[in-house]
Amino acid sequence: MATIAWIGLGNMGHPMTANLVGAGHTVRGFDLSAPALEAAAADGVIAAGSSTEALAGAEIAFTMLPRGEHALAAYQGPDGIFANAAPGTLLIDCSTIDVASARTLHDEAAAAGFEFLDAPVSGGIAGAQKGTLAFMVGGEPDVVEKARPFIEPMAGNIIATGEATTGQAAKICNNLMLFINMVSTSEAAVLADRLGLDHRVFHSIASVSSGDSWPLRTWYPYPGVVDSSPANNDFAPTFTADLANKDITLALAAAEETDTPLVLGTIVQEMLQQVSDAGAGDRDCSIVKKIVDGTFPS
Ligand code: NAD
Image (cartoon, rainbow, N blue to C red; front, side, top):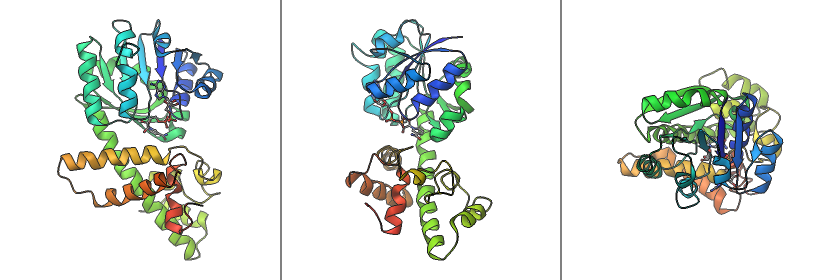
């Protein structure tokens, strides 16, 4: 069993580390947020006072942070991972970040003599809790194989995506579909409601029909239909609207760079921006249903 450093113990990092602890690994964790650190410690993570303290004795280090700037801050500088990890520590960033920041991390890791992977995940909090996340892993094939046994307790699927940064590329494209499907689910759910369909009846039909999607099965936007839906808890966050906006904005930026018209992606980004602008970016992203039914921002 390994000693693993983990930086970023939020909605995703906390349940991911719980699965590593459950598999018998020693996990030394750090988060800037004291409540996040305490919650992870309650599930067996050894709470560290800094990222350098978390790295002590670790042979592998994971980061699970919100955005590119947070990941860069965690790795760079005198207090960062590159300056303080022991030689030979395998470094894996699971955050969803822009390809340019991922490229910087790969390059700086190589310059500092570390093996590094970009390994964003899909599956949400439920997938993190159950240990069934899909990992999209960009980097050298032998490094991916070296990382595989450490990732396995958290994963349903581990897919090598190719060269450095292709994990992030896959994640950005996947989440473009995710958030378009989230809005399409909201539109259909609100219309079904107004046409007099029972929520459970419509959900049971769509989930075995051609309208099926991950948001339909996981985030159905009316309460009492799907156990995992944030609608059951007044849209308490599982995946915040701000992070969803971040992801779809990454897709739009990549589309601009590659001259790819994203008509639906542009509309969905505008809806998520409306949520963020109204100060509700910390609520679950599936709150866009309230834009569709006209009750936002109440
Ligand atoms: P979160 O905001 O709940 O957690 C991030 C944590 O990182 C916070 O607790 C924050 O305090 C901590 N942090 C920030 N900078 C830090 C630093 N320098 N050192 C230590 N800790 C630091 O976010 P999340 O929902 O766990 O998402 C993390 C990443 O995973 C994001 O990139 C997100 O897009 C991606 N993701 C989220 C989901 C989801 O369903 N929530 C699913 C797949 C991927």
